[in-house]
Length: 319
Image (cartoon, rainbow, N blue to C red):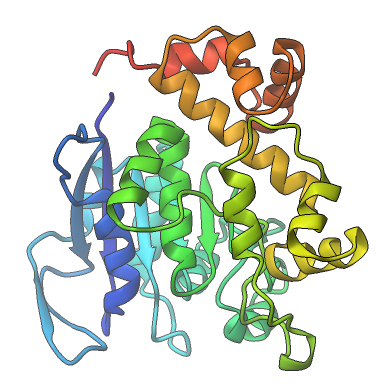
């Protein structure tokens, strides 16, 4: 496993939660898990940085820390009404030019937008700030109800727990689904929420569906090896297929069929990483029936083949 260097750029007054999202996923060594990341924190100027929680942080690294980062995280930016610090913008642009991935959590998207790296591209932020973001940066295609958007070289997330979702998604991209699932399990977090899911607070109260899909999702996740259909999910939820589809769209932002496929591909990724089972056996275990179907679905959703994925992330991969 290649060690990936992540540097979080803190800005006064720093939100403790957004910083903790990155620190918890990238900066904590967990028993039994290999270290996939080296985590550091920097500020525009080393020294004391106040937080929104009423205490100060002592930051020893300055902007030069970004020069060696593989990923730069902007964990929120509270002073959106002020001009972006020129030295910070310059450092972010230089990091991006040499190939670093720039990741903005919640209001950090505002600072990232000042760099120009989001011009004519998709981005998201906390639903409460989306209108302000769109007005300030008309060249950015704002998706106000999306959990997170990963464009490869830049990524943005909505607020609160969506920052954790994005960080776990990046771990999945860097080190595979099984490693990300193990981190999520240690954090007692759901292992995978797709970026296209809706921000739960984005819909007005009158449009929200109070009935949670969690029971039927848990039931289905334990039976992926069975030939489950959307009708099976509807029967389990005691809903018509049409009503179930509406609930999925309202709560998850995707259709029941898309959700089933995502779960099955994610389960296949974990088996490819953790076992030496033949592709045909894995296809049967995750409910995709045949190796041909698994290869086709894998190519569509992961943009590679099961064999190439196992070569990159399998348990025999050198660390």
